[in-house]
Image (cartoon, rainbow, N blue to C red; front, top):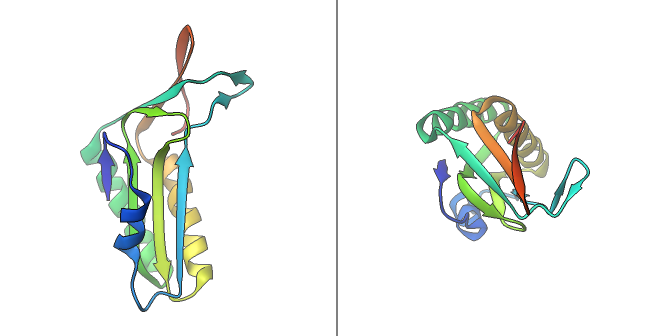
Amino acid sequence: MAVKDEALDPGALLAEVGDHSAGAVVLFLGTARDHSEGKTGVTHLEYEAYPGVVVEKIEQLVSEAIAKWDLVAVAVEHRVGDVAVGQPSVAVAVSSVHRDASFEAGRFLIDELKARAPIWKKEHWPGGGEWVQGA
């Protein structure tokens, strides 16, 4: 579980949750796109957070997911700082014995992270930028 100011490494996350007992591994990557709310030309995103608070929230969400689903391993990371279009800003990796648990837990983790973690996002485009709701 981490909040990082460097590029996320999906391969490392997959390795972190990989296990011979897992029959399913689900990886979700939230990536920066070039448009938002009818505006085109987004150049990059900027994220701010209090890393200690966000990591604590991620750990709480992971504990909730483990209590609800039979999971083998979980890894969650979120970027802070500037994220170029096309690059991941958040990653959730989940492994389990069966696929349903991995899909359901992965969806829960990304949805609840967006709803509960204090992470702020600013969209930048040529000539301006704007803080927007939701990470």
